[in-house]
Image 1 (cartoon, rainbow, N blue to C red):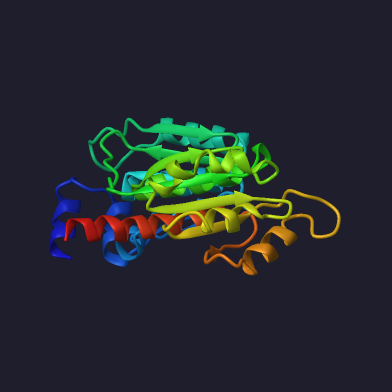
Image 2: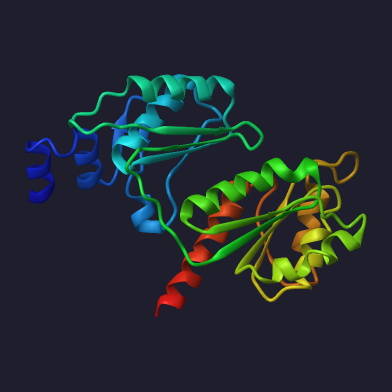
Length: 261
């Protein structure tokens, strides 16, 4: 505590960072930001843009960058991106340090990643393969990839290898087998995660996607198929790209730690 107070008094950190160190979170008008989550859980706190105004998203993003050096925002739109760009340009730190932030908005995945100029993220010696059955599944798969990458894993994206033509996935099996953990995003009947899990030794995370229509549409058949998989795998909820990416990232952290021992 004393070190934090002395750093605040010396102008080395700002009020938001001091609060986050002492309380584990920083308070804003838009809510509390869990600045200690990565240290406690190994997963960076993410800001879910859905249900928030662009101004609220931007305020939480600014607090995230102030306290942790980065922000990870999911389910965004163009208004959120514009508000964040403005907030980063207008942000005045309590210290003399320059922010010099970069804002990476991926419209397809709906993610925004902000890094302060001096931010150095984790670098794990582990690879996550993110496999998508079809182009329609790529957005949710991409969200998982962004999250796992921010945890520090190397990402290998493998797209458009659905079971309508098994040759497409069989052509990539050696590549997938090199990964330490595999996320497989698939909609419609959702058969691809089961197929992949039968081909590799690494843990497989099934990510059902809300593509498809009629009976079992909107991800229902894909979710139920993954839950009934005869190949061993783990299943997350429909369109839960963040959860799949975070779980894959945690496994990658364990792989990295085991390699260092």
